[in-house]
Image (cartoon, rainbow, N blue to C red):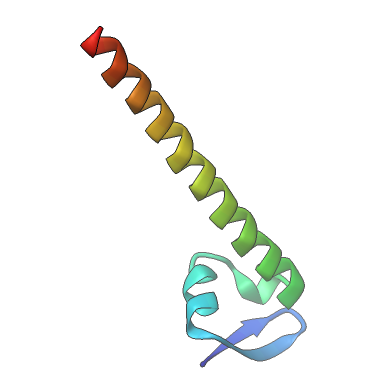
Length: 65
């Protein structure tokens, strides 16, 4: 567990959540806002990875034709 400072006060959060929030200015955000931003980043990263995989596969298939 890690202690993270939020606008609504310090809070103990799981280590993996603290890692996700390391690039956020958590002292400017409430806990709920920080969790939402961390989740939004996870989703965006997943979608970017999926899209990149699809584009790469498309060009690999195209080269084989």
